[in-house]
Amino acid sequence: MFEDALRRGVAEFIGTFTLIFIGAGSIVAANAIHDPSLIGVAIAHGVAIAVMVSAVGHISGGHFNPAITVGFLVTRRIKPALALLYWLAQFGGAALAALLLRDLLPRASSDAVHLGVPALGGGVNASAGFGLEAILTFFLAWVVFASAVDPRGTFKSIAGLAIGLTITIDILFGGPFTGAAMNPARAFGPQLVGDHWSHAWVWYAGPVLGAAVAAAAYELLYLRPARPEPVGAAETGVIEPRAGEPA
Image 1 (tube, rainbow, N blue to C red):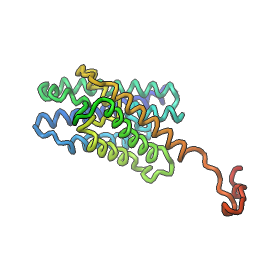
Image 2: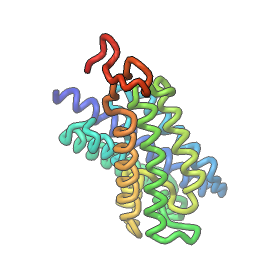
Image 3: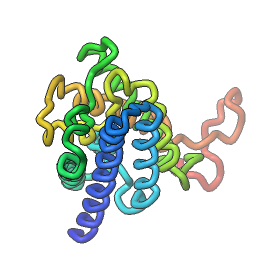
Image 4: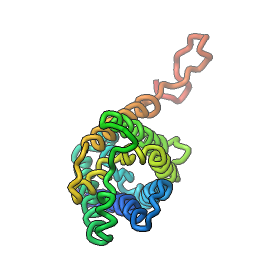
């Protein structure tokens, strides 16, 4: 039991570390070469997640996001003790990634973008930012459940690609307004290391709400046990299950 939990925790740590190191690092790198391309940053985040979900999703489920773990918790797909381990691994991986980015990259470039910490922009206030983060994370959690959790998912074998592309499109839209973190760990690492906490609650409350609503909605609509089909057409009034199916 302990060994299995440790393996899962290490997978979550490495996956989250990769997201923050590559994602936040891409923002610092864009500033260093004076090419702040939104497309490049979006692709960096999306590909990082796609690769790591594909690599270790079979070990831990490939959450790499405390909000996604909340979604699994509210739908009872993960035990509270294991969820706590995941959160420790995710926040720990994010903090280490941000720390190494600060120490390995030119300080001028990292300071200029506050180590890639998500921030409000484009005239968006904290309340609107909260709403945007909740909606963007709803999309992400919905795709996670539809592609990686639902056994009927069209993209079951390549769930990482669907999840990574969702992150990419979310950043292409939301990046200029909230940074489109969709992930408390993505915010926490740079915030902690760089000591940038302005409107910090936006990137915790928004993603948690969005993921919880998406997970619960998908669970109730598509993953709860379905009633067996009746023998005859609905208008016949026959309600018995087909032969061989449970009542």
